Image 1: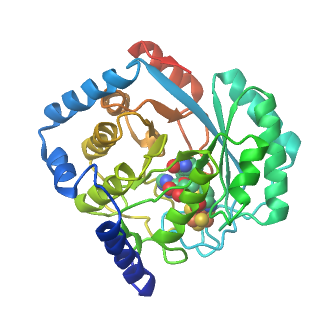
Image 2: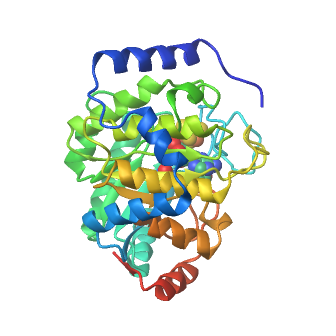
Length: 334
Ligand code: SAM
Ligand code: DTB
Ligand code: SF4
């Protein structure tokens, strides 16, 4: 794919360097994270599973259901995303859902056993009119007794407070990859833009859901760099989604060399070790994984999934299949 290395890329890396020189007491050095990646697989999984048991019930997995409340037509150029208006994919630009559609979908998610309902919108960030509608949706989701999560893009000053006031429990905003690789994937927003939104979410006392995508053609150092960012946040995210790239026809990352699934499980294990108290979510990509790989991911410390037949625009295992796997593994859900 054509490189998007440009001014923005240089800015990402410079910002990252100055940030680390000035500010951070590192909990996890890059070298320590690299060493974890280098461990024999069984040693790594043993360590991760031990830490998992010390912090969580190892047989319980949290279920979050996603709904795309505004699909397609997005102005951004994220190279993985079928919803960008810049790429020719099968996803169409559709208007924001009405409140009844959202309530219906949240009711079904609850009936199927989900405890959190996550609403995603293909925006660079919400306009005030959009935010008012989303706040209404959040109130309805909360009234059903579900936790509410939203992922709406970048937030401006004051917007996180408004969402908090409506009852939002979690805001999802991913760093996606390392600062060094970031500019190869996205040019329309910087790494710092993302960190600024995360700061706003944290300051508004909303739980942070922040992770990334692996299998985007990054080298192992890209995965090390992502974990390094997440694990050294002043307050690590409460929820860490680890997505395996779902390749979609028409996006620039279509045709990227597939990541070995064991390397994906390693990334989950290292998220668990470096962020022992966070929920680690086995996120996009489950449709391409067999039951054995998913079971290894649970053993390695994944304790949350996206549950329901669709992610935002792509497929996910159906609920019967997930329930059957849980039954075979003796996993309870909440
Ligand atoms: N538009 C908002 C934003 O980007 O901030 C929110 C929705 S966006 C689709 C949420 C996240 O989904 C992205 O940050 C990315 O990590 C993930 N994602 C999108 N497309 C993906 C794909 N093809 N495979 C894996 N993860 C993907
Ligand atoms: C996250 O980390 N993964 C989810 C959620 N947060 C919003 C999205 C995955 C999207 C996969 C591609 C699609 O379905 O469009
Ligand atoms: Fe837009 Fe979000 Fe997709 Fe990027 S990931 S193109 S911001 S919908």
